[in-house]
Image 1 (cartoon, rainbow, N blue to C red):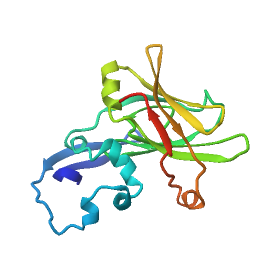
Image 2 (cartoon, one colour):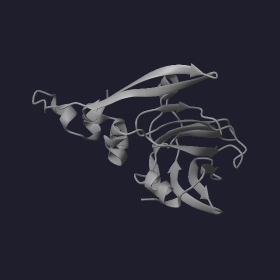
Image 3 (cartoon, one colour):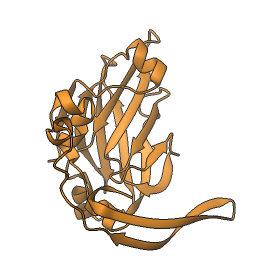
Image 4 (cartoon, one colour):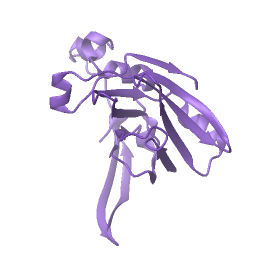
Length: 203
C-alpha cells in the first residue's frame, strides 16, 4: 500500500538466478480526511518532519509513481574513475526503492536522492545525502538518452562535489554540493544527514 490509497500486488519468482517481481493487480481506494490526526503530521516544517523535510521540499509526495510502474533506465554511475577514490553510495527512487551499492552499469529507476561517501587524503570521511533536481526525470526524457551516465567530480578541497549528466558528448552540470564529516551517531546508524550546501543547475 502507498500514499493516495494506491494498492499494488506482486509476487516474486526466481528465474535464471534472478528475482523477478510480477504485478498481478492494482487499485486505488477511496479515502477520507482524518480530523483527529496530530497537528505535527499536518504541518509540514523542519520542526515536525525533521530530516525528511529537506526531501519533501524538493520532491513532495509523488502519488503518481504508485499509480503506474516507475520507468527504468540504462544507468551508468561513473563515480570512482575520475577521482581515483573509492566512492560508497546508495540511492532511492521516487517510489522508495532502495538501491544499495548498485553496479556501475545497471537497468534501474532514476535516483531522487543519493547518499555518497568518500575519504580525503588524511583518511577523513565525508558523507552526505543529496536530493536530485525536481525535474531531473523530465530533463532526461527530453534528451532521449539510450544511457543515463551520471559522473561525480570531487573538487580539490575534497569537500565539494559536482554531479554531471554526460550525454551525446555533452557534460551537463546537474548540481554542486558540499559534503560534511559525519557525526558519531550518523556513523553508528549508517544514516547520514543532508548536504549543508547545494546548488542546482537543472530546474
